[in-house]
Image 1 (cartoon, rainbow, N blue to C red):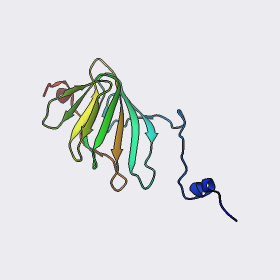
Image 2: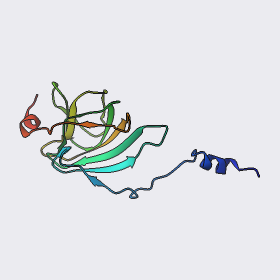
Image 3: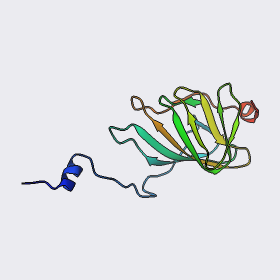
Image 4: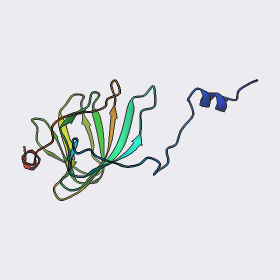
Length: 148
């Protein structure tokens, strides 16, 4: 019996999939990985053979990630609010809607909202051996408030 192209594509995992808005629950950022309130809305998980995933992260004013690195780097697309990003040893930089930020693999950094404005960004990263981030120590209030 002949199998239609469409059925063969489904059997071979080559069919287009749609994840509907609201089908994936939001996750609150773990206190070990974030200072303040950060909500993570998963957008997509890696689909083999790809190892790329993405999520929308919304930080309340004053909230930020802990210091961290990504084994294959990370792209951020700012969609709302105003925030900061800082690479270890570098200056804190303002980020706003429409900004696209690339952080190279292994670069220690943090990002989050300013003290007075929330921030939402889409984070896109690739995994190595199933891991797309290496979490480190929290960003202290002194580090957060410092201009450098």
